[in-house]
Image 1 (tube, rainbow, N blue to C red):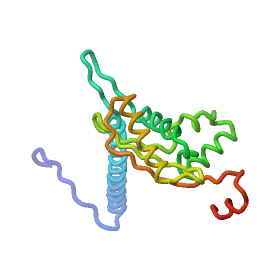
Image 2 (cartoon, rainbow, N blue to C red):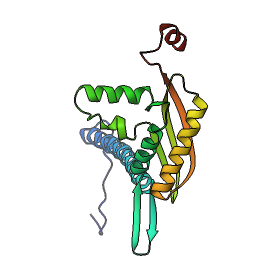
Image 3 (cartoon, rainbow, N blue to C red):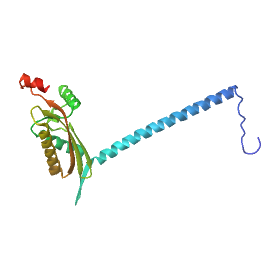
Image 4 (cartoon, one colour):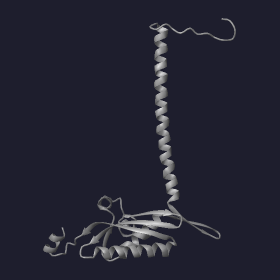
Length: 195
């Protein structure tokens, strides 16, 4: 050896050293690919989690006062909107078919306390931005009530409750009528025509 540099001769292909070098090279390449895949998977998961945290923080209303701030979580707005919607005659229940089935199963196996049906936010989604709220209510209407009239009364009741009780501006109340409840006490001819 001359000087400071170390010179390495490449191994001859097919020799033991050459085969080992090829295997080590292939292993290193495969490991680098796997690390790259893991890094991108981790980055994507981290991005999703960060987006969920930011969305959760963003989906609350913040009211500033002279001596501090009041933060209202979207769940609070959903619960108040749900209670206001249930107060309207002609509203049988809130939520779509799937939500009602899960609530029923939860109640039957003892995981629910039955209180969610009365005061829960099932069937209500709220999007908060600053001091504004956009509300979406999914309803089941009682058979025999005028759908449009019930929907308008629900809209007015939800707007009044959220604006008066929380001090938020309601920008919209979208109503989805998911089902019609037919009472067991209807005459058979009316029940058959309603189904």
